[in-house]
Image (cartoon, rainbow, N blue to C red):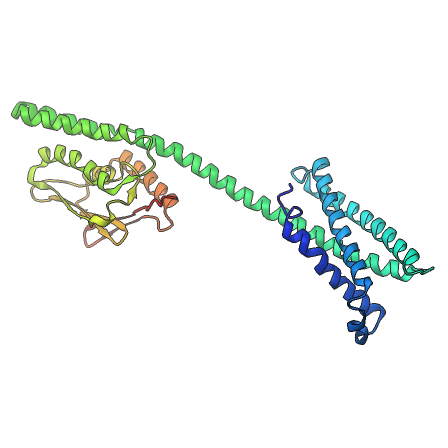
Length: 346
């Protein structure tokens, strides 16, 4: 627990003189008039009060160090507060009384110091209350920050596990439709079927190659869409088109691997596609965000597996970027706005 404040060099060096001068001013105003302030300000009394304040602060700091070893604040905090305040009060009364008695008796030659004892002890006890209050305020602040850090750490760990699961998932619907297209193409054109098999292998090779990557460049993500597009292009022909208009300067920005593939899968799963209702999948950018849109011709039955994966993907983007994602429908079109993530090298 020595990280809170009592090992702070600035606090340890600056606090005793400043508090000592302040305490001296209070005492001087109690015993003398304000007019005598300038006359007494540089006397040995000031050095005495500063020295006493330094001993007071260092003693309380040492007391906290000892208590941290005997009864740390990680245990029952209420009991620690009671122990610390009682110990601080006893220590303050003892050390102030002893030093004050020695100073006034052997240096100043006073025989009776009852008033001085009451005054000094009252001021230092009051200071000790705020000293410990400041310590416990930092303890509570640290606990609050630790709670937030642990919560964020847990959230990140859970997200990493889910993200790993997401990247390792094989959409059975996509695989089934891809094999169906390839089988149909085998009866028509074996050379074309071989190309489609290569496209299918590229889809899953991309998934395997990036299963351990949290992020990947936009350029690679856009290229990963083309194998899926080529597969379904063989099925839908001119009813399916891909339009990519992305500025070159943002293609170094990053996305979560599989983003573009999943968005195209989602578009294919929720739309009726034929020569009368074509699907034009458009990819562009809006400043530092990726914009995907297409004409919406919704099917009656939706594929829930794609929707669930898409929901998780968007939750992941909310973690990576403060901007988050946007999804909306307007004038019969579906729009997705995905934040592009810039990775800064340290």
